[in-house]
Length: 213
Image (cartoon, rainbow, N blue to C red; front, side, top):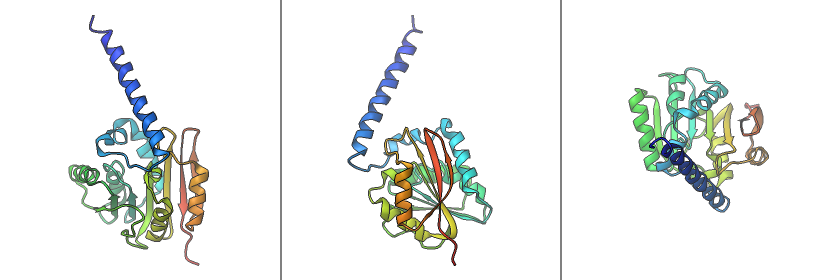
């Protein structure tokens, strides 16, 4: 008699998750809200490992590179990026939520990587150093930023000429940003659309900062 309870529990939990997602999506249309730290498991779990590997491949990392993880959350990508660029490379992980940064710091410490620097800041506040990075990343983050244009301008300034920002979006994210909207914002900030990786449900695009001259 215990077995029928399990499917019922799964259905109930699924309905609760759907209700939370719908409510969050409705609210996000009126106000940009970051993913709260207590929901970090939604973006940091074994089910998203395939997407993590895809991001690493699309960033085209090499040892010694400097990478900006903009809106790093719990460190899902900062740690594997740090491993990919090696001890001679650097990663700056930026987030505006102290608890998210604490989780990212714990993940980096547990992984034994010492080439990640952490910064508590909101994107667009002008705190990210200029012309320091070869790559930058906004993974499921852009829609959570109230001042998106200011954030993209700051990232553009932070990149070295010839570097690029990888923006990734997934339709299931309540803050999903369409490709057309991302391209329009990027063009206004001086980016040039580069490689595109996409499907009906998710996509990533490399926004290039043109090389000097």
